[in-house]
Image (cartoon, rainbow, N blue to C red; front, side, top):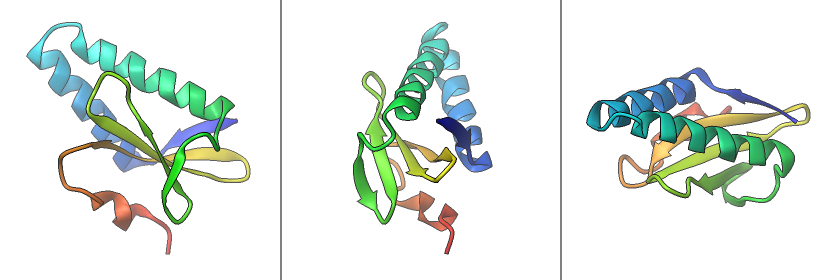
Length: 98
């Protein structure tokens, strides 16, 4: 199944990668690789993760304090947020379609 990042999710993904890379060379790349592995797994097993609200599901990144929040649509998986686990809980709710 195809995957697509909402623009806000893509920006926070890039921002987190830049932050990690600025803290320690190579860690930003490791973050990017980890996100891509989880997203590839979502594409293969979209219903594997727990539902957290409505149709939004959550996958935890194994080595970073981030969650991937996404919805499964008929033709694609939409990544709604790449959210830090301890900052601004539920800020991404405003991104959901009404």
